[in-house]
Image 1 (cartoon, rainbow, N blue to C red):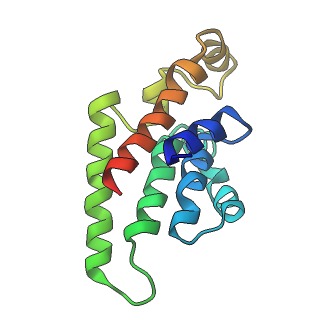
Image 2 (image 1 turned 45 degrees about the horizontal axis):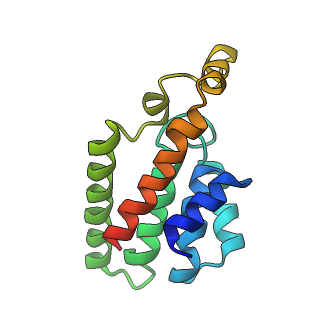
Length: 144
């Protein structure tokens, strides 16, 4: 199963957007799935459902860090490569969706009854969030 398929399957299951992305690639880069799921939990819904950076984007940033990131060896080139790939990911995601900010992507505040109702009535999970997870995984596949 590809990373894209894993992410989609996870998101259709019980996991949030960030968990779905990070856990689908974690083992490939030395992080066990359970730990990845736990780490990414708080990033769903735009960071703790605060609707800041999209959780699928945050999850992708963590995957990029696993792949290219600087460890205790202080490899500055690895840090710079990580930043460059994250900027590229962000640019590609924004080209497709216009933003990386959850509240802008959804067009509603899911923390209010009205916003949650709008989210549910317009099936934004299926129409938007699903696509953000899928596109994040697709962009990752290209960049990794």
